[in-house]
Amino acid sequence: MSDRFITTRYSTNCYHCKKTADQIITAVPNQAKVVCNNCGAARVFVPRIEDVSREGEYIRIGCYDQWKLVETATCRNCHVTGPHDMTIGCRHFIIRCRNCGFTHFYKFDLEYFENETTGS
Ligand SMILES: [Zn+2]
Ligand SMILES: [Zn+2]
Image 1 (cartoon, rainbow, N blue to C red):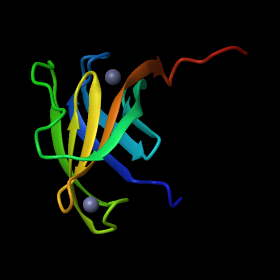
Image 2 (image 1 turned 90 degrees about the vertical axis):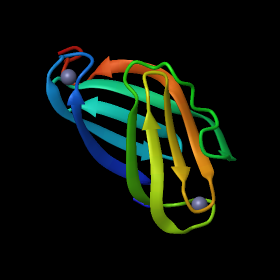
Image 3 (image 1 turned 180 degrees about the vertical axis):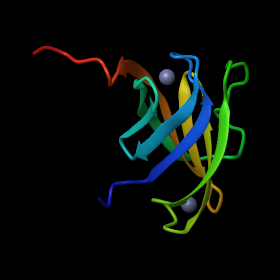
């Protein structure tokens, strides 16, 4: 749908199952999610702020596993389709348009496990 912003995957050691597996990354304007393709461990991030920022702003150093990715997406601010810098850490999920600097800043909200059945 039109609200899909970025979908990508990143292969790394899962914090939960400790195996090297694709981490499925989905970002839409009102939520960002990382799900392990192997064990189903999911981390959900919710928007905290949207702003035009300078590179490096908001990013706190010291997180144990910070992923840096570049994905092509269409910016909601300048409407240019081009590279967006993604920074995903244990507590935050940041997407920044390289063209205009518009930044989506999400903070960690909750985690759950998609493979675990709930009831019946
Ligand atoms: Zn896993
Ligand atoms: Zn932009």
